[in-house]
Length: 540
Image (tube, rainbow, N blue to C red; front, side, top):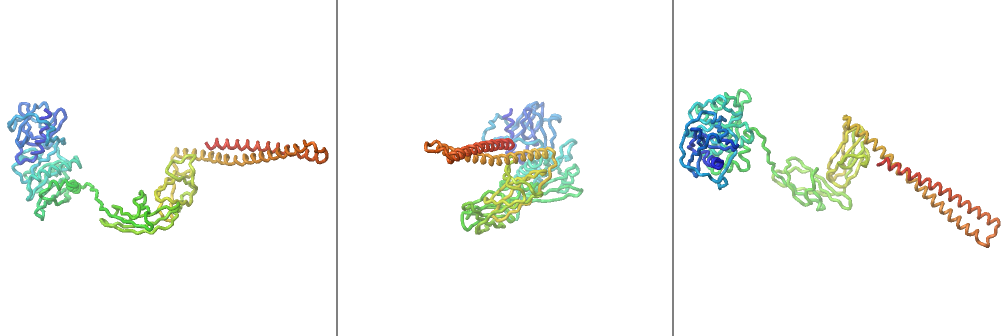
């Protein structure tokens, strides 16, 4: 049954706007959950008759009533809840199931209440597909009938094929539903007692509809063109506000032009007050530099090209252009400002000169530590100074600094280093008020001080170690001199006279001095090692 039911998709799409519909258009939902549009022909003896065109021939299909979950008319009424009625037509032929994957087969899921096949005003022979009743009957909605918040009445025609109007009505309504599900459609034939739009809008206003849309397709001044317009009637107060949007399309390819490049979508959006992103026209900037091969960039953007070069922009206001290159760590650069010409090319010539960008950093309050980069500050982060401070940078581009001062929230500063001589940064810091943040910063300050003390101790440990090493060296020199004297005293020719006793005493003095140097030097080296170890402990 599902294959047979799915075939109704093709029949609806190929003949949804036929000039002689056999029955009212409905939304059918099976017990299995499958939904599809079809033409309803009636219910007799618990059998539902649905019709559609197969190979350009109208065919009637019958299904057990138990297979359906609901059959909704254009107003959202469930026909299954009404008493059974005899079928409006007998099957014209028996139908064998068709493969749904066959070429040209289409299955369309749609929401209940979609009435894309309303007959435009002027087609008096058809049904009132907007209300589900034959034209000329009582148009008043029955109690409980669904009345949409926003109502589309379809397209009227003036000198244009009504078939195209019907197709354009269907497409336009689908766009409206996608933009806002509150849209519903009630064709002009839903109000046969009305001869003009004012009557139609007053009629629906009595039922609480305050946002009504009328379409019209008419020939343009050029014989091969057509004007497609949508008029909106909005009741914000007692009196309506009327606005109109219009496009001109080719008469021979009306539908193709309507869907091309979102023309119809934009028309509906304009009429309904939805924002439309504007397409900005491209402009071009050609840059030459002296010398050539300079890097061309814009603030807060990556490098664009190497000069001479041309690049596109969509900006309409004045923009900044920078050119630079590095030679042996020396920066040469230039800067200018350009106002693009829409759709045209602006030519710029720049002469590079030697620059040393200086960043002047001032904070409020002063005394904030400056840390390079975007990373979070830790106890081992190294600052490059405190504010106010001047730093020099030779690499143009985006740069990040982080400022910290006790009692204030960390401030991340991101700025573009341009190839100019001076850049000023004036930074206001915010007081810390969150208790957890304050405690976290106090702990960091404590650890930072310990780390500082540790680094000082590690640095100061070098002096005693060096002094101790020097004393060890001097002690060794004394020992060597004492050894030389001792060797002389052992010579046989040495007489034990006054000279002998003098050398003996000198030998003793040298040994004693060397011993003192060794003891003091060893103590100093030991103290230095101890201080270094303590500093290492405080640091890590």
